Length: 50
Picture 1 (tube, rainbow, N blue to C red):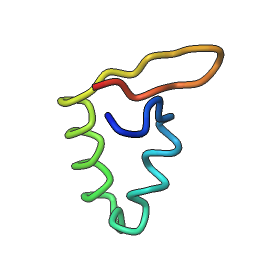
Picture 2 (tube, rainbow, N blue to C red):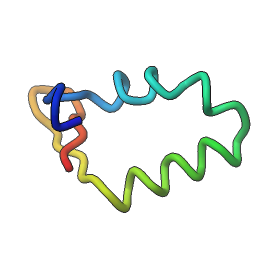
Picture 3 (cartoon, helix red, strand yellow):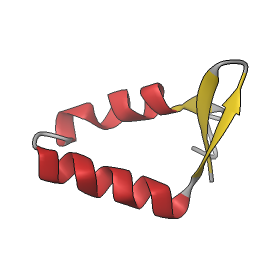
């Protein structure tokens, strides 16, 4: 995220989509993302900010 900023939430999820196979994986990913980042809304897009 630091090297390729800004990243939208959709872009980030698409990068990890192959690893998010089941609901448990998706929930774990969402919880980790909530702990380490904040969502910034700009011009109708949601960006992940560390």
